[in-house]
Amino acid sequence: MRRLWWLLLVAPAAGWAEWKDMRVGLMAEAVVEAVGQPLIRSRARGGLYETWTYDHGATVVFVRDRVSFWQQPKARSGQAEPRVAGKVESRLTPRPGR
Image 1: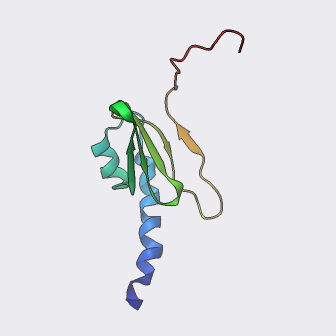
Image 2 (image 1 turned 90 degrees about the horizontal axis):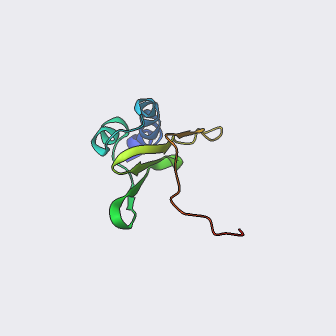
């Protein structure tokens, strides 16, 4: 057990470089190939939106089964800038007078 402690330090950092392969429009299989399996998968009712959560604050948001947004893992000295893909449009109509 003592000899394996370094894996905890090296394994998460090794995956950080793979986030450079992320692109708008990737499907789930390509994301898994690029950055690995998520810790948590959350799908909205109706299945239109899905969020994958990874270590160190990294997330991937799918809209209609394609990547539309991702947040790279937070760096040790600060936070990574979010990578926003595409324009999120609301289909909600504002109420008059608001």
